Every structure is written in structure tokens, then in C-alpha cells.
Image 1 (tube, rainbow, N blue to C red):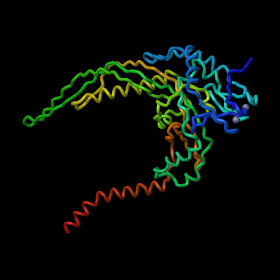
Image 2 (image 1 turned 135 degrees about the vertical axis):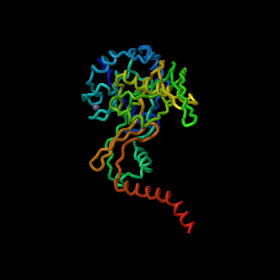
Image 3 (image 1 turned 45 degrees about the vertical axis):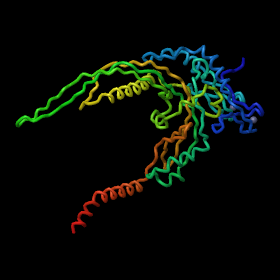
Image 4 (image 1 turned 135 degrees about the horizontal axis):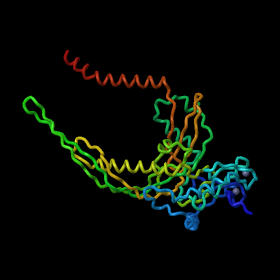
Length: 370
Ligand SMILES: [Zn+2]
Ligand SMILES: [Zn+2]
């Protein structure tokens, strides 16, 4: 029986493993230099063939994700934790959420096809555009205006193995509608003899809300720190292309693994609070505005998109500093060490400058008065 659970990315010319090249957007063989286009049309056709097998998850009234069918996910992906590399025959053990990897024994780039087929097939992907070779360049740009960074960090910091990862995202579009009620307060004061009379009026306000959203991304991987991913946003959703397994070659990628309910709640919170502050911002002319109630509902479309990011750590002075880089734009996020001696000098200089700017007019007045 042919093993269809693993797809290898092999070169048509020499049989060596191929990888997706972010610089050219093509498949490349590092052995013989053969390149191959990824035809967008072909991947579209493939998608429509599989579209039929997909559950209707287009309109999610009130964020009910049940239609995604958890059982299907569990049965097809979790049941087979062991794969065999077609090149060397080694046993590959992949965590349930992992969908592509490089064989640690022979270096072949493989995709675990069951995890990206049928109901689990992503709706789209943003291919890597930033080449891993250019990461030091992006880091240098990031460091440039960090005045408190210890100088030795540039030379002494050791970048550990960089992993290029396609991170699973749910991307929400749709409409939020409903009504919100607020109470608005105005007060006026007037003097009457020895008394000050304050008159306070409270108004009940009602605002109808209807707001369209498009492309609100929420990362769906429990492994990736949400804050880290949020910091490397935005991603340009106009560059989403139809999913094709070849984009994964040479990169690690995960399928969604975060409880869908919690993702829905995060997206919902984000959209509802935006809608609320938009409604609030249109209430003018009151001294104080408080929300008193109301009800919002969401009609939302969620797409499952893979998004490119690099992750690595830098060892410095016995501590590890984590970084993430947007694989589409090169935007960097991470924590940096602070040089305490630079820090003290920096704040001393700033305090001194502030003192001078405060004292200068007085000194000038004093000198002029003499
Ligand atoms: Zn080749
Ligand atoms: Zn192998």
C-alpha cells in the first residue's frame, strides 16, 4: 500500500530535496540549482476539489465553531504520530500539531499530508518573503535606536538555531451589529448667594451599532506566545495565496491547536471592544459617559491561514533573549538586555537636560535683572 501520509519535496532533475526560496518565491534545489515555479492555478484547482469535503464554516453565527468538527481533526491527525521518511526510511515522530518538517537523519523536506488535507486544509498561506540569510540585517536595524542596549550584545550575543515557522491563524471578517446603551452626564454650576448649586442631568443614550470587519488575525497556535505574534503584526492579507504544500518545504509548520472556543472569544473581545469604543467616540457633549448595557451579535467568517515567522533566541551573559521576526515584512519583536551603566548615564543626562531647561529662564531673568 502506498504511504500517502508523507509527501517529499524532491528535485525532478537530481532527486535531492527541494525547498521553498523566499527570495524568488520558487522551489529550489540547493544541489543542482534546479528551480520550479509554484503555479498558482494548480493549487487553486486542488483546493476546489477538496472544497467539497469541507464543512460549512463560512458563516459562524455567534461564533459557534462546532461546525469545524473536532472529531475529524482528532481522528485524522492525532492517530498517526509516526511517519516514515521516504528517502532514508527513518521513523519520524511528529507532535500532533506539526504539519511539515525536515528529516533529522537525511535532511529531506517533508510535509505530513493528512494534516493539511480535507477538513484540515488551510484556506490560504502567506509565503515567506524574508530570507533567513537576511535576518542579521533586520536585527541590526532593530538594534540601531536601542540606546540602552549593552554594546557587547552585538558581538557577544549568540544567535541559536533559527526556525522558520508557518504559524496557524484564524482570520476573521464579518459584521458586528446590535445596540449599546450608555448614560451620559452633564453638570452645570451656578452661584446663588453663599451657595454653589450644581445641577446634574443624566441622559439615557442608545446607539445602534453596525460595523464591518475584515482580516482580524488571531493566532491559533498554543506554542507561540500571543504577545510575541501580536508584536510582529501587521501582516499584509492581500498577499494571501491559495494553499500549496510546496510553500512549506524547508520550513516547520503547525496546524491550529488552540481551543477554538478560546480563539473565538479572543477575536470576539477584540471586535466587540472596537465596536464599543467606536460607538462611544460618537457620543459628544457630555462630561461623563458610561456603558449601561446592550447586546452585540457577530456574523463572522473565519479563514484558516498559515503565516510566516522566524523564531530564535540570543544567548547573552548567561541569559536567553527571545525574538520573533515577521517572515513577510522583517519586523522584529523581542526582549533586549539593558546595560545598567548606560542606563544610569542616560537618565542622568536626561535629568540634567530637563533641569537646565527648567532653570534656564530663571537664570536668564536673574541675569537680566542685574
Ligand atoms: Zn536537483
Ligand atoms: Zn530521511
